[in-house]
Image 1 (spheres, one colour):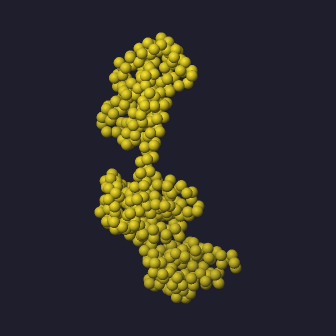
Image 2 (cartoon, rainbow, N blue to C red):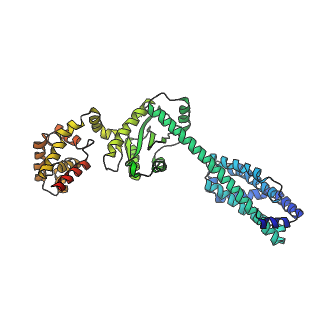
Length: 427
């Protein structure tokens, strides 16, 4: 209490304050009704809560708040202890799903309604100095209560967030490991509403260039991932942060493939400094670890490409099989490497022509248009590709090998461009 307000409060006689407190106490039921009406009218979050929430829980808390203020004004209450009930109510509001903005709005409404009632009391009407002194004390009371409520609410939310993040991380680690799931994680998954007996896939979001992204950006992107994911209270995904990646175990019962691809592509577009990989659909606990490895393979392929889209494991299956077989260099030497070497020596465009031909789904006309040459020139270059590489682009088996060589790691289209450009500059 400031010295000025304290001096003013001392100037109010005990009998006058007791009379004011008694009158407010006798009117507490009517004031509480007006508070409830104001809450219902002004606070949307309160109206959306279950029936009876305002008339019972909120009304009772408003009445206790008024009685505490009366005791506060008469200086017959321990300030610190009087705030404890409001701190507890803030924790309860958090668990009921009330936002902190709505909660603080409620306390501001409370202060406005209560002060309007107090200002109409005969004691305040008859003496402006009494009114000013009481107004100052009411403001101090509302500020103290609001501060205590906000702190308790935020402390509770932070504890819950930390607990949830720990539980998510533990659950993800156990599921990804492929080891038997502990009872604690099983219980958490049950509370979340995630049944691993359902069909599910893994969506993996990884930073594209870790050294170029702020350390906190992966955690900040969690909100975007949660917002874009489908799901309901009966079919919720498990989303968590694992080192520098975001892992999503997404139930897909009733969700068709194109819908999953649309969601994953939306993620890739919004999180343009990340790569998004998606596994095949699996079922059961043992399927999670398999799905995670598939999504990781997809993100690794995505990281070497510049396309701003999600990569599904089935999209990169051939490339992944070749890489894991150890045959990448063999495929390159039989397809792309001879073309790059020829281009460097003769300043030709065989590799670029192959790149464009594949990108345009083997369409001669579109390939010629992009390269700004005649279709016959494209035909001639395809013949040269056959002579140089030994693989005929007009034969299905050879064309598959050429296309595979053009997409496996170490021979992406960006690598073609960089090598060709380097050769052009050197000559």
